[in-house]
Length: 134
Image (tube, rainbow, N blue to C red; front, side):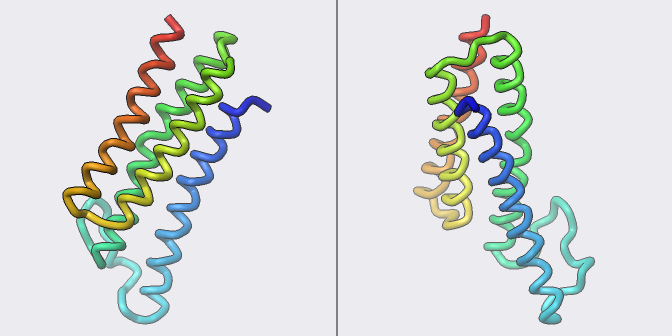
C-alpha cells in the first residue's frame, strides 16, 4: 500500500481519536454530575479552556480532512503517486498531529504562532501537490 494512503488513514484515525477523546471527556463530566448532557452547545465556547481547545482541535481536523481526501483522490486517479507524494503525505500528517497537540497544549502567542506554522505547512503542501497535477 502506498504511503499516501497510510497517511490518509492516519489523518482519519487522528480525527476519530480527537472525537473519541472529546466525547469521553464530556461523558466523564456528565457521569460525575459536573455537567448535564445538554450543556455542550455547538459553536459556543463552553466548559473548561481545555475542553474548548479539544473541541476546536477536533473541528479543525474535520475541516481539513476533505482537503486531504481530495488531494489523495485526484493524485491517485491521475496515476501520479510517486515518492514525492508519499513523503508529502507524511509531512501533512505530521503537521496535522503537531498542530492539534499544540492547540491542546496552550493558547499563548508563541503556541498560536507555532500552530499557525503547522497549519501553513499543510496548506503549502496541498498547494504543491495540486500544482503538480496540472
